[in-house]
Length: 120
Picture: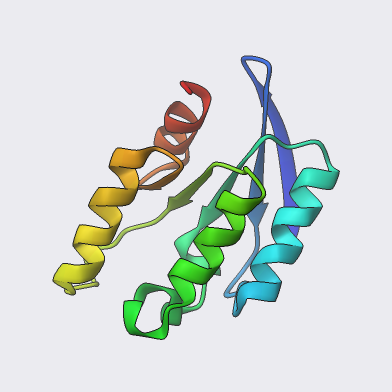
């Protein structure tokens, strides 16, 4: 796992880069968040491919637990991925509502993630 920090319009944005799933539980997410914060990041980008598929099954409550940590530590987050494989209406609604709030954004590209995170 590698965390890359980019300065964009005076905002430090961390992007987690890895092959495969590296966030399997709340502790993994906290470790990534802490490493990003320690490196001076104000905001963070994760890739859906690096997060366990359980995150996208709302019945596991993993998404809520992980996103609550990002909220508690005041680290706005964008999750980049393609979500068409998820057919759950509740997940679609959850992502829609998250995007409206702006603290967590589910987006399809890193460019869109940066746009959402830096405009705040």
